Image 1 (cartoon, rainbow, N blue to C red):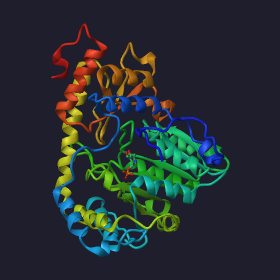
Image 2 (cartoon, helix red, strand yellow; image 1 turned 135 degrees about the vertical axis):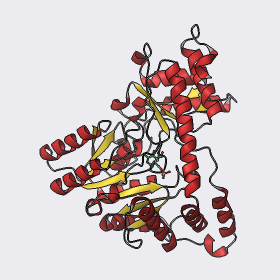
Image 3 (cartoon, rainbow, N blue to C red; image 1 turned 120 degrees about the vertical axis):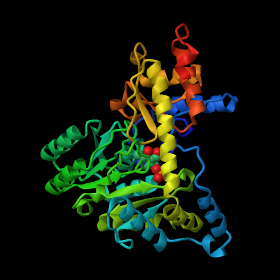
Length: 414
Ligand SMILES: Cc1ncc(COP(=O)(O)O)c(C=O)c1O
């Protein structure tokens, strides 16, 4: 499945009779920019890539050491179980208890996925069909929309940047739409807008879910990367949440294990069972050595996660300070791996896709155009703080030179 930064195949009509679900996919707006990034790389040009939330830091060495040990045991090379091995699910439950005071039954309320994106998509496939509607956050992380569309469901995208308004709109939609929405997807800390919430948000959401009979999926991908004492609340820590929904977490971000493909779904046992059922048909589970290393990660590497979060905070400050000196509006986020920046005047009229193309072409800095996350993202750019502080300073200097060559002084990027 495509994501916002993949080097694309050409976006053109298929010459074979593919299923209608492929034709229903929304236009792929990252295509042009990814193609240019790819061409620059192939030509050997250095691109500072702030396009994707793909960590560049290595996981804690204990995790790789455990993988190396587990890989030597022949029994770990067999097919594993689609749900994840018992000790892994128990470790997820233990972590939820430690971090959020949430009690989970590891056998019925936790399942491992090949990354949370896989689990999320398959859960949508298990839950949604023709005539079903899901409310998704806007601007939208593409998979929140595509996985519903690929399951033949309908999408209503509601602006999530003012969480109270989002709840009002959810309530309004439930009161006026027939049939009512079946699913509400939430994602805080939000990608791409970086919006965060306080626990009261989920209290209201659970109330609404019970009143209007919808189910909830919370995508909690950025749970581990919080700044300055903010603790992003878990949906599951709200009383009654397990009656109405599940939450996805991942080892991709906080543990820098994105390529390992390991994430989790936890909460409502019937939703977990629906996901387990569909996964039982589609896959044989995550490579067992990876599952064993993930247990070690969750058991022993809490401090490494904190260090990673502190590093992202430092980079956030470097990038936001640099952009502010260039006169940009970019509120430092409370959590996550991104800065969501408003395109400054006089460039705003250009549109985010063309502006991002300009930055890539003339400054050698790749960023994600807000429009790629739906119409609500227009006017903004998303910059991932995945490069180190020195490269971020270099990026700010290059952007300054590209936009204000006559005014720019080296000071802006210092
Ligand atoms: C909001 C959100 N959800 C899910 C994912 C996917 O995570 P995973 O690597 O666990 O599939 C990402 C990755 O960028 C994300 O930003």
